[in-house]
Structures are given as structure tokens and as C-alpha cells.
Figure 1 (cartoon, rainbow, N blue to C red):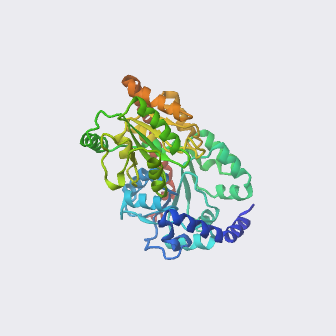
Figure 2 (figure 1 turned 120 degrees about the vertical axis):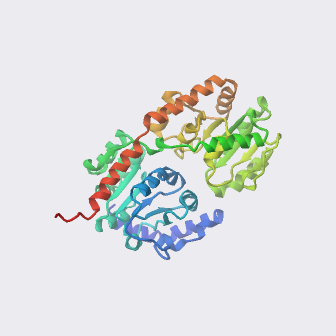
Figure 3 (figure 1 turned 90 degrees about the vertical axis):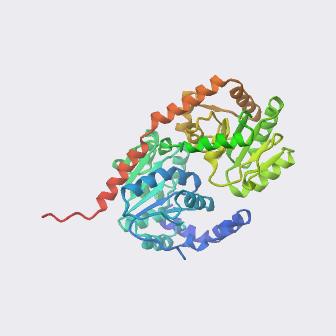
Amino acid sequence: MNRTLYTALFHLGLPLVLLRLLWRARRAPQYSKRIGERFAIGLPPLKPGGIWVHAVSVGESIAAAPMVRELMVRYPELPITITCMTPTGSERIRALFSDSVQHCYLPYDLPWAAARFLDRVQPKLAVVMETELWPNHIHQCARRGIPVALANARLSERSARGYARFARLTAPMLAKLSLIAVQTEAEAERFRRLGARPECVEVTGSIKFDLTIDPALPEAATALRQQWNAAERPMWIAASTHAGEDEILLDAHRQLLASHPNALLILVPRHPERFGAVYELCRKQRFTTVRRSLNESPEPNTQVLLGDTMGELLFLYALADVAFVGGSLVPTGGHNLLEPAALGKPVLTGPHLFNFLDIAAQLREAGALAEITDAAELATEIAALWRDAQRAERVRSAGHIVLKNNQGALSRLLAGLGRLIEAGRPREPMA
């Protein structure tokens, strides 16, 4: 498949795209709003001539935040426009940056929509987080001489095989990228094999290791636990859960309650459209449950606190003693394991980690990560960590060491972006 055929198929599939939007809007009404932006119609006022950053959803927005803040410091004269594809990503961008950046949805990957968007933004540099690659957007950037950088890039062997099946589409697209800042050498080699220019591929590491925690966050969590009279109460979190995981996690919690009757589970679904369904599941399974969104404090008999708010995940991690990271008991590929590790929490996960293989391997080898496959294993592992404070401390320390040993990716990425920005600046005339 080449780009012409891809574009034709995209146009033919537009009715299905709109139907999918409407279907998602039934569960998450925000999908029915700002639809025009997805076609580069009715875009908000955007000051041109700056840096465009694309972060598809919440995880990428959080990962991009330190990079964006540093770009704002280094290039205060350049407006920054951040795009995403989901309402939750949009909310997170607003929460992170307020009005200090420009924001809209990224238009669909149609030539005319991409052209309208770029004619409005006129960026000097485009930065795409991880592997959200769109052939027409990249082609339109190339036509305008806009360098495109792929930041914090990751490419599993499985994804590489998928891209290879469409080599006539993906190889020319990758060859147009000016910088591919990858997390590992294995991923660098996969990009080269798929058609990226070798001189444009750099191993910078994962900027997720450069996570910094505001000291006020754990202090606020400690204060809230004291307010709840739960300072000594055993508490664990199951975060970023997907459909099919909640039942397993609640089963594990029921087993924990048999030996720890006052245990509290903080259950945080990944997507807000699932908040109501997960709450009903907890009630149906007869767990005494309160909702964070209603500011309900857990009582001594409360068994589950549903984390049904946006932008609070780090704080909810800080509240818990042990953290399970979801998207890993089902074949989603896992989510960010470094956030709870940075907060000093022993980290547990399921076996499906293909989005974070290198990070998971380093944490596992250091003794900072335990993988489980079912509810019984999860309950056993959490109970052991609660029972053995010295073991829990060793796990916490191991996580911090892994983080410290891998930091520096952000500075390496920013150096690469800086070269692209400086190369595009008009040169001073010689005297």
C-alpha cells in the first residue's frame, strides 16, 4: 500500500470514523464536542511560527510535559501548540499547562485537513511523541520544509512486523523524519530496517525515567491518610485498569480481606467512560465502595475507593503502600511502571508488557517489579509486602536506583531538538 491508496481508503472509511465517534460519544459525551477540529475546521486562534507537539492521549501528554516545560524555558519566543486525539488527553493538557500553550485536536490524517492545520500553525518544528505516525501529516510537513522529530520513540518487534507489511507506505514516511530519538538500540535497529535514515536515528533513552516528584505530593497523601484515620491501614492501588481486569483485581482484594479485614483498595479505571460501570461492578460484588469524585472519605468499613477523577493518578499512587499497574492482565501492553516506582512504591504488574519491555526488564532484574498472572498470585504478593517491611524497603530502593541510573534522556532529546530549531533559524548576515 502506498500513500495514495492509504488516502483513498481513509476517505472511503470516513463514515465509519464518524460512526465510531458517535459510538464513543454515547459512553463519553466529550467525543461529540469539537468535532470540527478533527477536520481542521473551526480551529481555535493559534499563533503561528512555534513548535508543534503531538501527544495522542493522557500517557503521552504526561511523558511530554517535562520536555514541553524545558522548551518553553529555552525558546520563550516560540509559541507551543500541543495536539492530541482524545478528550482525556485534552483535559490532561489543560490541567498540565492551562493557557501557557495552544491546544486543539489533531485533524485526521487527510491531506487537505493536514494542510489546513499546518497552514494555520506554520510550525518551525514538529515533535511527535512515541510512535503516533501519520503519513499525510508527515508528508505535508516535508512539503513545507518543517522538520519532524519522533521523541521518546518506541517500536516493539510486533509493531515493526506490522509496519513492514506496509513498507511502501511506511518506508517513505520514516525517511522524511529528521530525528528519531529512540529508547533502546534494539528499537533503533528496527527503525533503520523499516527505512529510517541511519544518521537521523539516535538512542537517547526514555524520558519517562526523568520523572520528578513534587515533595508536596507524598506529604499531602500522608496528611490525607491521617485525616482518614488510615495511617496504619493496609492500602493498595490498582491503577489504569481495563475491561477484563477489574474482576480479577476485586477477586484478589476479597482474598486479602480474609487476612487483612481493614484493607483498602484504590481502584482507578484507565478511561473515564468506565467509571460508572466499575462502580456498579463493585456494588454488585458487594464491596463497600466510595467515589473519589464525590469527595467521599473512606470509613473504617469501606473496602474500595474508586478513583473516578482525572489528573490525580500520581496523588492516588502516593496514598497507597503497594501499586499494581493495569493494562497488563489483558493484552493492552501495560502502562507507565515508573510513576509508582518514583513514588517509592513496590510495583506489581501482569504479564502483558509489550509496550514497556525494556523498562520492565530493568525493574525486574533490579528486584523492583513482580509480575503476576492471576488473583491468587496478586493477593499473595501484596500480603507478603505488607508483612515484610524490610522486603518492601528493598523493592522501593531498587526502583529508585533504576530511575537514577537511566536519567539523562531528556537532556539528550532536547539537544537533538535544539539542533533542528537552530538549523531552521535565519542566519545573521556577515559584517
